[in-house]
Image (cartoon, rainbow, N blue to C red; front, side, top):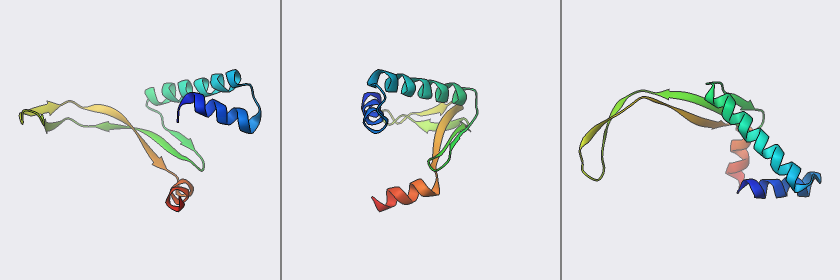
Length: 92
């Protein structure tokens, strides 16, 4: 699903103009990106939690050449769904 399709869903359910719905979605995603880039987590009740996690440096292998390489440490965003969300997905 794209941002435009999300805006269409908001338009259908709430009745906001599509342009305003698209702006709200853009503001929401920008806010989430800013919060996560600062290293904070985002918890949305009934949906799940977005966490920033540090992954340490490790050895890896180039699948094409087979050569070992060093993978540097980095931060990654992970998502942990809520129990309600998990049960909804399992029913589908």
